[in-house]
Length: 97
Image 1 (cartoon, rainbow, N blue to C red):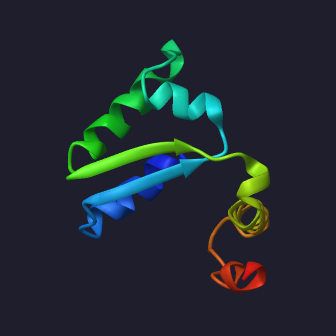
Image 2 (image 1 turned 180 degrees about the vertical axis):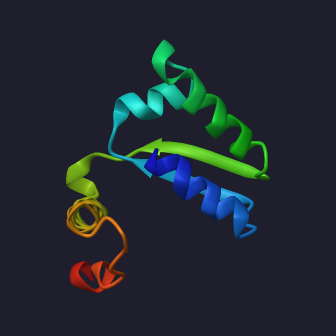
């Protein structure tokens, strides 16, 4: 869902050349068609539709140990959102950088 939201925002902002990195090998395999899960067909379809809006798009696996800053940022954002469900605290970006 996070990838779908990010991709939707990127497309809405007019970005057409996108590279999506994830530390979930399973997710990347699902998106790139190497594996299937029936329960996720709707989400994968939505990602495909959003991808069609791009001139070029790639989905790449990156191990979590090579993605520590982004992983920390995502965990911090999830924590803050769970404690503040009605508003996002944008200072989360400054706490990682």
